[in-house]
Length: 613
Image 1 (tube, rainbow, N blue to C red):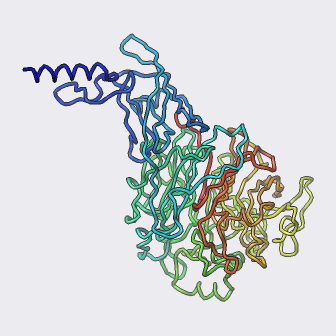
Image 2 (cartoon, rainbow, N blue to C red):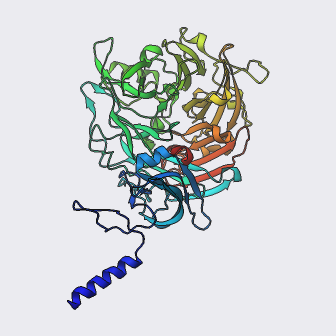
Image 3 (cartoon, rainbow, N blue to C red):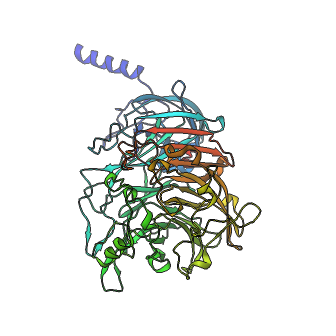
């Protein structure tokens, strides 16, 4: 009896000192108090949807919650994150969503909310202490990887206007021993083997990781339909993230709740690079054909040369077959591409080499199809790496790396204009080539070939075409009618339709063009990067994009800063990407952060306010 009484007394004492314990977790026989609550509502669920470990939900405890706000208390010298939570998100998650916890750290989270029970309304403001685990990045097993997502972040500069910025980073590591085990063979071709680990995370302006995507629950390098490079990230107008990988395209909210996760329609394969959420509610995906009958009777899978439009239910509404719209045999740019950086693979053994007309002719006669540079459908002749739907005239703008051209194509599948060197285009396409002009409308002379513009020849810069570029996005906020603005990341390989005398002479730049679609002219209105020289050069990947919320231009030079072997032009170490943001029109960055020892693809500002609006 004494033992029983002492146990009861101890239990009462424990309950007396414990925090609020209102029906947190129970069993089938009734409410059972076996979870220690921190505040006046329910339990804290960590990583609620299994793929975002630095997030949580503070459950509503059975109450109705409204007017909630969250503040993530920064570390000393750190960056504050705060946001309001709309009622629809409180209802969807069954509580208050928490985003931005520090990894391997007990983060203080301040929440404020109204709690309702029947007609009774109470207002609470309280602080939660929440531990989140360390970051986890899938390892590759290669000697170049020496850290998780990156080794460290060098914060060069952050203007006060941008101190609240969060940046979503989408990086791709080297091929891993788990992946790239299979290829398409019925029919042959395609880019199935282009299969790396994807490292996706959000950093603040102090370089701290505040979110990362834990990929294993949804990504499997050993599965054909669940593998592939995660690419094409965009934060949609509703705040959620959409992207694709391999044979899938998906949409999740920032806590990891699945909105949709779909296989590509059967007629298509090998998504990569770009998934554009359109104002019309549909998505434009850069894919390839899973079965194309060539004129010689061969059936092939194509490579990065089809765009499809799917609606909210995944039904294909339209397709753009670029091998029917453009010229898959325009080969002038193939002949000057550095074969060491044709795709995301940077192969030092091929660096500095180019393809001759004889090489291309032999390849075209062969049965060698797949993710290789060459002319004709079934090879990597186009390498479209972005698609942007211009809802104003219902057209698409694509960036073609292997044609070094930005091209606008209508719903009728007719070319509207081509921004790129006039060299090598057949008579069919010459009427659509844009004419370069200066700010006064005077024509700019780009030499006899049309490829060597003043910006190529002059140390000071000036007009130039883009070369092996990535991302071509219309700036809707600056465009009106036939006058539109387009941003691009000009990688710079094959600049001037040639390889330079030395690899160290290569450079990349972010650039903005003003296009008069009626006069068929193009003016370069802004550029940055040439003055940084080879240290800023990204042979592949990267992004330039206008940001309306701060009237700024964002650049991610994603494979810059690596150690190069100047004998071969190949890379001997991981890159050190540059993340920059500019006040619109300014020539020096307001933000510069360099991520050390990581291979980048793209990055972009992320709005936590939009995520929970």
